[in-house]
Length: 112
Image (cartoon, rainbow, N blue to C red; front, side, top):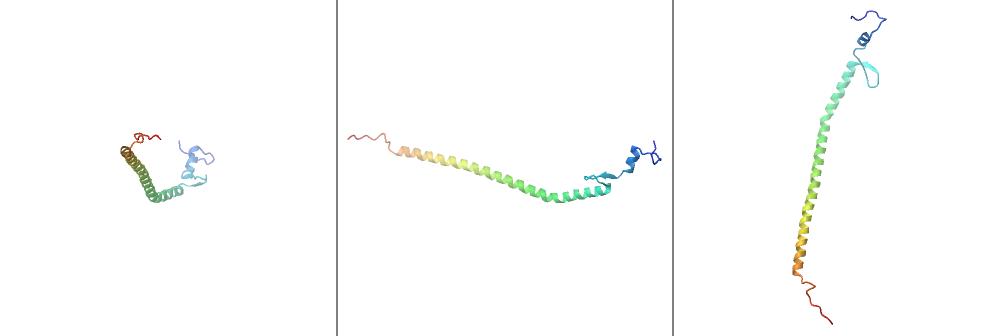
């Protein structure tokens, strides 16, 4: 069906053709589609331009967190190993002292 030529009668299709190229903005004001598209492109370009610096900072932060986590785990592991070594040395020293010291029960009692 061809579009109507009668200006007093508007159909849905003729209304859409009249508004073609116009879009609603976020603040509900009607503006030109090409202007909105250029603003959108500018915002995307600005976001892309700032992204590499942000990505580099995020990467450095992640590396720092991983290194700190590894250092913390390593220090706990070292303390665990050192504690086992120290306890083993103390146990050996206690056993050596027990073998070399005379028994208190083996001494004869002197009665008055």
